[in-house]
Length: 294
Image (cartoon, helix red, strand yellow):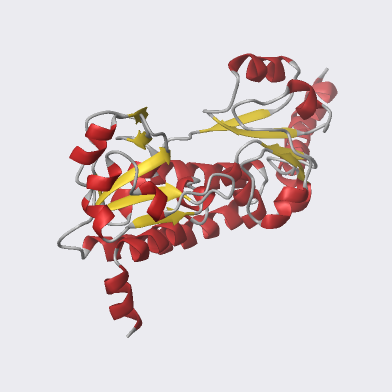
């Protein structure tokens, strides 16, 4: 009896030490072999962290870097197919909370797939959460922290340019054009945040989200600049835009000030957000950019 007690007291600490040693040698998160990304900004983050080789499929908003377009496609992030995703046999699916439809997300969850959802809010904090969150999932924490520090420094430098502006331009962001009711960006949108970060004023502050407005309401905005996404399939020239009802009466029409920017860069809120702010600021204030070059 005493001998058994002696061995128990000796064995338990030894087993504890062996177990602790085993836990320390096993990574907290094993890097997934096959990742499906259903968001362009998340795809960019995976690539920036050096894990692009593990991407088994991406959605149609994953346009950057260009080689991401060669990967198997799962469709648009808000119209995801269950079968298309499952057919890629992923270890992990990365989403933002605006992905859908909801019934598809529920089916994917029930299938046992490892789903990780990130905020799609138009904030810098959401960018930080995506970068550090994806890095943690990929067991690349140090790379994620370095990436965020680089992004944060670039954003800070770009925002400083906008803070120097004494007379900010008044900007109307048009998501889609219609003769009767163009769809424009109000508060709490990615466009609204980007306009402010770049040193401009969003002329639509009476509602949240994207909503159609009348030509009369367009004219009343008195916008100095009209901002749109640069879309190859739906090209709109300044000449065409400022002939439309409402737009023809804007101050922007006098100098044909239509600014078109890459949609994913401007509204993606991914690793290139600092570049997007700087680029948009340069488009708002070309004279200041010229002075900086000198």
